[in-house]
Image (tube, rainbow, N blue to C red; front, side, top):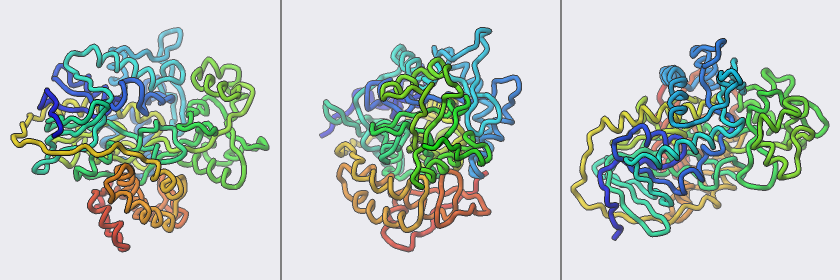
Length: 514
């Protein structure tokens, strides 16, 4: 019999990155439980975020320009209402973060230092300590969480299953070194985003296998835009995993992409190195596939200023024997960010009563088919406030029946990585996707350690197979054109299993984007 956590009824937030920490703080002083697989501040995709937060703060900028850039990058699949709402809330979110103790980079006159990144028409990226924005946000928010009495932090405890009764959330089954526990609750916020470790080449932590998506999928929730996975074009090309990220901000400061001959192979591409990420990633991938090596050349710009502007990147480059100011940096694309996730409304509500999602685990409609650089941290902080308000405005329901559940084994994505890496990379095709579905189905149907990662991979493969076009981060070699109609696709786990088991692949639920 799994014991019951001694504080039943409190909302439970799963995940302690920026989205989870911010949601917990926004709910104070209402009591809440924050569940973290590792000690807070030590393991999350948020920590490795270098680029910063996008917000229209410059004198030459305007929210309408930020909206336009976001919609252009999203390639027809953004929800414009959501885009406008989040973009206009971004400056206030940055002010809130400063009140929480976040130290943003400022010029000597105390004006916010604004950087430029790909597909942005203005300098609107705020940073912390050059290239340590995510680390600084997590540091400050984690300190604020620990200082907030209403937040009960349960560390080294991993959510394994959501308990559903009568179609609604009834609890969370979690496990850690001390064993399993059931948290009785009718309100859960999923903030465990990231799925890069389903791939061999990734910038995400090894535990980021899509935990939040697996929990939601098993609970019967609707997921959306699963096929859109962003591959960052400039991860440090070394054997270590996860791969170190060379921030887009380095290209924003003037660094160029070259090959082993010194040829700037993207020079003829509109936007060149600062084209949207999907365009740059495909350009790098194709050049590598043609037998070349690819390097990021920062010798001219930022040149000798590299160490001051990007101290963390300079440090890990030097650790592998590279001086970015005098030597080109070897790079290659790596799985970095998922535009898809749990389908939610403007307040973070999912299709399951009592279940919300926030941050990378959620699909709000902001990113569409291709995330605009540095919009993700902005989304996490802004949506955390709306999600917190929605949860607090939902009356608690006590479950009167005892919860009987078991804690499954910890997930292991190692068997899934080679399958997804081969079929769901930068460029895809139908034959490889069908082969992946056949390989993933038995793993997903089993109840072993590979099951949860395989479920996420299977749903992504089905979604990718059904999208017979190339749009944003989803590129099909066998369907290279962009379809005339922009449609968003949603999918539930039962439908994915049915689609995988029969070759007909029944149509997924389609919903027109706004």
